[in-house]
Structures are given as C-alpha cells and as structure tokens.
Length: 297
Image (cartoon, rainbow, N blue to C red; front, side, top):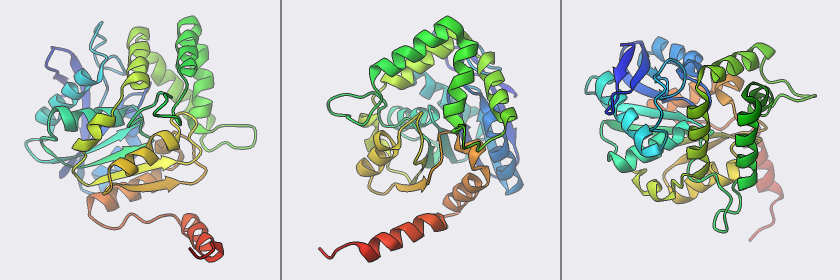
C-alpha cells in the first residue's frame, strides 16, 4: 500500500489507519477517501482498522476510460476487502454514492468477508423519479447537473457544495474552508469519471439488491437532505429491510461526515459494538409529544 490493483488492473489508492477489527469506508461523489479522515482517525483511536480508498477516477486512484458502473465498483470494493482486511470480517460503511457499492457488493459477491453494513446519506435504493418511485429526483435535475459540469465544472461545484452542506443565508453548519476543501477534492477527479459516476448513481436501481441485506444494517440520514432526499432512500430501505435501524438527523443536510462528525462516530461505534444507537434527545422529545397528543385508535 497505498496502491492496490483492482481486477482489471486499475490502481486504487488506499490508506489504512489503526489496528483491530477492519472497517472499510466508501466515499461519496465527487470526493475521495480523505472525506473520511475525522471518522477514520476516531476509529483508529478506538481500536479499529479504518480502511478508506479513493474510488476509481477520483482522488489519487487511476482514471481509466471505463469501469464507472456499479458492478465494477463492487468488484473494486471486493479487491479492497481481499487485499486490506487480512482475512478478517469487515464492517462496510458507505456514504452517499458509496452506499451503492455496498448494495451491489452484497448481491454480487454474497457479502463475503462482511459482518455488518452502514449506509450514511446513501443513494440506495433508487434515486430516479419514476411512476413506482414517486419520491425520487426528476431526470431533468440530473440532466441539468451534467450540463453544468460539462459547461463549467469548477463553477458547478462551487454551488453544489453549498446544498451538500446546507449552507445558506441563515445557516452555516460547516466552515467556508470545509466547502473550499471539498471543491478542491472534487477538482482532483477527471471530468469523464465525474460524469459517468454521476450517471451511475442517478440511474442504478438497487431495489433488487435489497434482498441481500441480511446482515445487521444501520441507516443514518439527515431529514433536510436536498442532495439525496430521505423519503426516496433511507425510508425505502427500512421498509424493504425490516431489521435495518434508521436514525434520522433532524434538520441536517447531506454532508453528515462534516456536519455531525462526533455524532456519526458515536453512532457507528455503538453499532459496531452491538450497543443501542440512541436517537438524539430532540427526536425522542418529539416522539413523546406526538404520542401524548395523538388520538386513540
């Protein structure tokens, strides 16, 4: 390491921090494995081996012309697990686009070498708005994203990350430097990988893959996520996977790794250690109030 070779010869950049039970962290679009740094460091400090890699086409990994589909992404994940987890069962944690790698890995590779999975702000099971997925994102939105990147990718991402982190006139949950760093990371990726990866997460239907979620499953999602709406994703996962636990982050946008890193760390480690993943007090208070005022049925 830090480079490993995928099945088609593509070199993937991997960094491994700490020792102990392996946790493989799969980043979102259009970032790199560095977006996991606060989580990776905390996991290493708590006795885990945090393994984060750059998806093909992004960060320091190779930028081949092809392979930007979820079958290939899942095969890349398989290579990371095989070469970095040292034969021990790993937990998989996927943020945003990274949730798709988990879904396809579980169905395509039978969950080999994995003991539990977590989805954070994940695109699973299906992002596109269709007749049978009415809460999805309209195709026109993805088309506008593609056009914006083709015309002026640098400008597109300067606006994109404001929604990503929920930065507005009245709200500023992360610093300007966090937004700037994300922009710089996005610009490390190639234009072709950026466009084709976006097409993959926008059009891939993971609903058939949900049957493979037979392992303990945790779902973390912000209720104000405009990038990956919670109704079409996290809520659908827990409907289809009855044993999955959903923990909502009230009022939070998409970029939970930077918006709520301390809480993400606590929720993940509780899940890894088979401890209850507690809802925040404001959610519990709201649930209690609703129970008090709700009419009898």
